[in-house]
Amino acid sequence: MATILKDDRFSRTGISEAEWKVRVDLAAFYRLSALYGWDDFIYTHISARVPGPDHHFLINPFGLMFDEITASSLVKVDLDGNVIGESDYGINYAGYVIHSAIHGARDDAHYIAHFHSADGMAVSAHAEGLLPLNQRALALIPRLSYHDYEGVALNLDERERLVADLGDTKVMLLRNHGTLALGASPGEAWSGIYQLESACTAQVRSLSVGRDNVLIAPEEAQAEVKRQMSRERQPVEGRRTHYDLVWEAALRKASRQAAGYDA
Image (cartoon, rainbow, N blue to C red; front, side, top):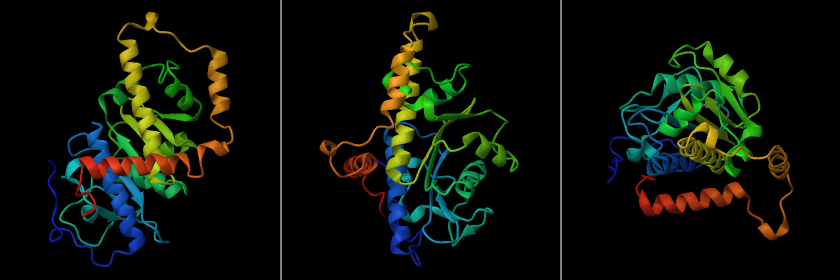
């Protein structure tokens, strides 16, 4: 069972109601990612922009595992890498480089997830990238970007190239590295990383039978899925957005299986 971090280690003093809500959502995102097996010991990171004009963002304390993260334990930093407030922990510097780049460049990047899952790393290293092997991949490919590997993300000048490669997309494969997704809401970011990780897993399993034995989706079907992804929402689908429904369901799962993230 995950360790529940006590409030005497991490202070809630001075945190606004709006920031606290973001902290709770982000902590739940960490716990859910651990449940799905996308964590990497104390490495990789998910971040969220703090509401307000200061361009601060929240990220995991370097040293805690995903299933230990709580709302109060998250570390607040600015785009220059300064920790705001007090924490017993620092942050992963590579996480700062990647997340500060995207938060600083994209107004719609309220939540960013970056993982080193086994299947995500495998597909990121595949010369053909994500292949049109299944419906999930077909929906992603038209809006998926790639960033070539330059070494561990410790060089600040890589940020410019990362942002340029990302463009206006919200899902990315970092070559020889891992997966990334962003969103204007936790539901959008969660949906993006869930779809990308799942598509990578499906590809790894499909290719286990050999590249010559897999069925690439017909080009006409690929084009049709691309068209369908931009269709208008139908009244029968209800009023709440897909991302809201996804996140409400995800929070229910976190509450059932990873209680304590909101401490």
